[in-house]
Amino acid sequence: MARPDTRRRLPRPSELATMTDRRFFRCLLEQGPMSRAAIAQATGISKPTISESAQRLLAQSLIVETSRRTQGHQGRSGVLYDINAERGHSLGIALESGRLQARALDLKAGEVWRHEVPLATAGSPDDLVALVHKMIALGREQTGTELLSLGFSVADPVDPKTGEVVPLPDSPFPVGHDLNLLKDFDTAGYPVTLDNDVNWATLAEKALGCARDADDFLYVYLGQGIGAGLYQSGRLQRGNEGLAGEIGYVQTPDGETLLSLTNRQAGQPWDDLTLTSVGHAIAMATVLLNPALVVLGGPRVDASDAFNRLKAVIEARTPRPVSIEPSGMRSDGPLVGVSIGAHQAALRHLGMTEPA
Image (tube, rainbow, N blue to C red; front, side, top):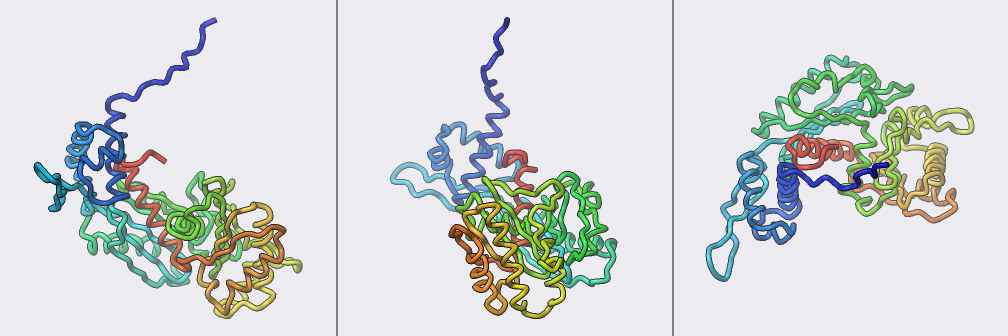
């Protein structure tokens, strides 16, 4: 019987070139302008190979030679390379009840534009799509660069298999139920990504917030709606239909959902019953998931000492101590998250990171 061939296939020259280009680009993204010699030292790749990579990236307008030079003790000074911020921008758009927010990042992940407009509560999906097109056009006008990718944050659950919004009762963003943004924009020529607002806020917390060093944490967004992001074993968990973390549908002993309970207090500080009920639901999720960290975000966290009161409820109902922290991003976590996601999609589209 023939033995299976367990030898690994060596990368082809084109694959090696792509891997080198990605490491070159990643160095600039993480550390800023660098010389070829410095990149070779940081990556362990030979100087001639790095020089070839520089020429490929320059030809694609992904990097530029800066006016700065290295300061050597002898010989010629070296050229410093940087990511070409003018190559284009990625755009994250957050849709929620009452407002549409947009945030554009250049190729270096620097914010170059941010804008917000009100949303009519009685608007139609067609009106919303038309407004998004206007926002895209305005982003191009304000940045003066090409749109490389587009990301959407929607204040409704999104099925990760289909990209469709999953309608649920008492939704804080019912107009989203009839949206299909992936189909509306899938012929645009650039990648389009979509997820719900709390998942994006969770990823923002992991990238830039107090959960940067946590591989297992629970993020809870408390605003007009209530939702949780589950980040476990280094990955965001979305569930079968994208409904993981929908703790707003946890019922009180009286059979009322948390969403229904909080909707009755819209525009007012939550009373003791509401705070206790919400804190109890977070505590149950904490017991089930055993996270290292619980992050409380959203505009409600700032209201009437809500964070401290919720923290006390959670701590009283969990058998083991757990770190509980307020989010530093509060209400704009979804916008920050979706703009980061759109930037990462742009890098994948340009071949500068591994495919998703």
